[in-house]
Amino acid sequence: MAEKVLMKGNEAVAEAAIRAGCRLYFAYPITPQSELIEYMARMMPKANGVFVQAESEIAAINMVYGAAGCGRRAMTSSSSPGIALKQEGISYLAGANLPAVIVNVQRGGPGLGDIQPAQGDYFQATRGGGNGDYYTIALAPSTVQEFADMAALAFDLADKYRNPVIILADGLLGQMMEPVEFQPAKTEAELKVLDNQHLDWCCCPNEDEPNHHHHEINSLEIDPVVLEQHVIKLGEKYDKITANEQRWEDYNINADNEILVVAFGTASRICKSAVDELNDAGHNVGLVRPITVWPYPYDAVYKAVGPKVKKVVVFELNLGQMVQDVKIAVNGKVPVEFMGKVGGILFSTDEVKAKIEECLKEAK
Amino acid sequence: MKTEMICAGFGGQGALTIGKFLVKAGMNEGKNVSWLPSYGPEMRGGTANVSTVISDKPVGSPVVAHPDIVVALNQPSIDKFGPMITPGGLLIYNEDMCPNGIDRTDINIVSAPMTSIAKEIGNLKVMNMVAIGVVMGKTGLVQKETMLKSIAPLKAKAPELYDMNLAAIDKGYEIGKTQ
Image 1 (spheres, rainbow over the protein chains, first blue to last red):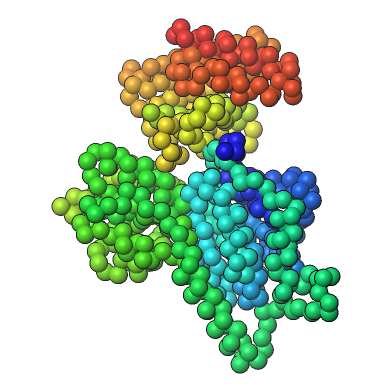
Image 2 (cartoon, one colour):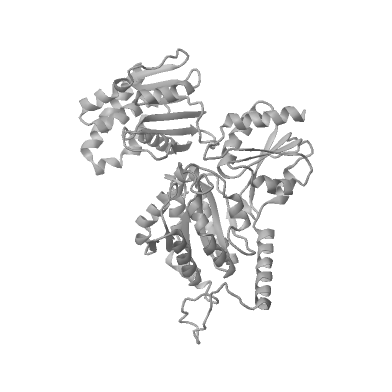
């Protein structure tokens, strides 16, 4: 086992990205993700990589577009208002079938909001914040370790499907330190394999190919007949991702659950503490934590609604966004309730417990 | 066993570092730990605090609402976090900067003139290490040996300061053991 180190989420995901073969990183600073860009500024040159502090978030995402178009592992990161600015570029990446990783260390919104942790960008991440018919794979970590592990996963998924992947973290995960174990860094030979995997479509000159085939990276298809086929193909890709890549965690799910809690990311950690305390007191509460928020694990949430579950309660650090997906998943089987906190304020374990206790009482 | 702690003081007093060294030592003892700082538009001399959890089980919520231990380096920290301490819990504070102390009888209280001790040792910067010593001496939250091992890499960076850190830890440890 590798040695454990104590690290902030922002730094851990940066280190893990470099180890996963990210050699191009472009970003613009913003709290609460600035440690990520600072770490990249410090470490990317040492890894023979490229670090650019772009003149804006929009420039950064378009630099990612260029690097991804050359078939290289490229990444950008920001926090909510900065991610909003990147949406045009993300839509273009999706339209051009480009693999890339975007980290969103969410803060309070809308607008400039504040700099405290929030989950208000769920809709943006799961519905596609830019124009057109597209989805980005969206991974929601809940610990610093998982945040770091998702760097490699995000790049692998991005490469596999040629699609942008968003890591949807928040200010708490970015700022908090926890022990992390890193995967070994990719070797030169492994990096070469990564670099070569996209040679059949990317813009990077391929010296090995006899006719140096010309590739075009583009999201503009002016002929509707061509665009129709292009978008249909994108749809088929999204269907494949939906079928293959749903991830979630079952926490104390059993046939005797009285209440089912659904929460993701930071909110799920606070809920787990509340669930533990309630179960220690003799109740039986289960929890499902979606790890991919797109594709959403609808079936897993539905299946977690056991025969004795009277209510499903959703906890989010927003006004109620994922709860819509939970309602689709539960499909009217039992009532779905919601509790949220906004403005960068977290709910306490006690508040979550009180809400679940209220539901337990009503269910009796 | 799970111990939740809040360390607080003026920005620059080293409150966040107290938490960092303690959780690092906890991690090196194989425990699950989390370190969650307050962050915001603060400046030097503003308030700073950190919530830490050291636990046998994986850490759920890293947010601490009912600390078992509060380390307060100044009076505003006692005023803010003192009332949150769980009954039977522990308040450790810096006598030199907490003129009012706390008005509670249901918790354990250990105080030390941390600023004066640090000055005596020769550097105000090691004040927070006195506090770390008190925490370890009083609670055994982490073992002193682990702590010394955790901070050993600092020796190469600044040998003189490192020695003062050790002196500060020893002094605090002694106070924690005896009070």
